Image (cartoon, rainbow, N blue to C red):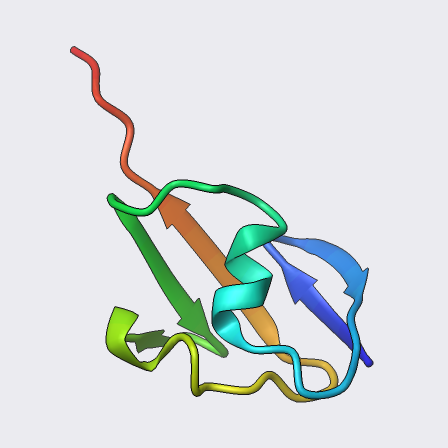
Length: 66
């Protein structure tokens, strides 16, 4: 199955969850937000939200600085 994560194409197994997709980009456990097809996915739903073919995933991480 093909999905787009932060603008880059990725081939992932069927049934891949949002949580698994996030792990391809960051191991951070805080300061991370995810949207699938422009809809925010709450952290409590990451483990149970499966991605579909051609989904667009945006993973945003908070960066501290000034």
